Image 1 (cartoon, rainbow, N blue to C red):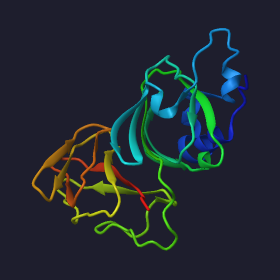
Image 2 (image 1 turned 90 degrees about the vertical axis):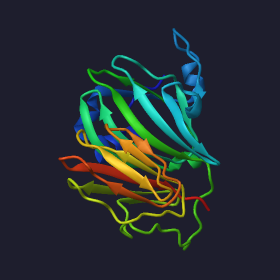
Image 3 (image 1 turned 60 degrees about the vertical axis):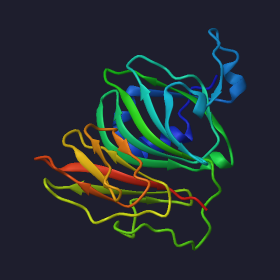
Length: 234
C-alpha cells in the first residue's frame, strides 16, 4: 500500500489548505492495493462512501456534505469525475470556504482514504459533476454576480461574497444549477427567492439551492462570507 503524498495532496497543501492540512492524512493507491490490508475494507465509489453524504442531486450533479469526525477514517473511495471543494474546516479549525477543483479524475480515476486526526470536525461542501464539459464559448454567465469568478473551469464556477450588516445583494439568476454556502463562522443570511420562499443560513456549511432568481440579505449585526458556486451544464 502506498502512503506517499499524492499529487492531490500537493494541490490541497499548496493551494488550498496550507499548513492546516496537517490534521488530516491522505492515503492513496490503486483499488487492488487496499485489498491486501491486514484489516481489509471495501473500496467504494465516492457517492457510496458514507461520510460523503449526498444532500442534493439534479440530473448529472451532486452536492456532497463531507463530514469526518475526529479520529475517524473514510473508506477507500474512488474519484472518477470533476469535483469542486469548498473547505469549511479541518480538524484544527475553520478554513473559511477555501476553494479547490480537481478535474483530472475524468482522465484517470483516483482512490484514497482520509483520516481526521482532530480535535475538531473535518468538513467540506463539495459539488460533483458527471456531465460533459461546457462547450467552448458558451454564454452561460449568471446575472447579478461579477463576470470574473474566483474559480472557473469547464465544469464549475465559484464566487466569494461578503455581505455587510443589513446589506442586500442585487438579484442573482443563474443559467446553471447553483448553490449558496455560508463559510464564515459568524452571522446569518437569508436567500430570498423570487417566488417568496426564503432559506436561512445560520452556520458554516449551511447551503441553499435557490433554483430561480434570488437575493442575498444579511439581517445580522456582523459581516457574513458566502461562496456561490454553480455546475456548468452543457
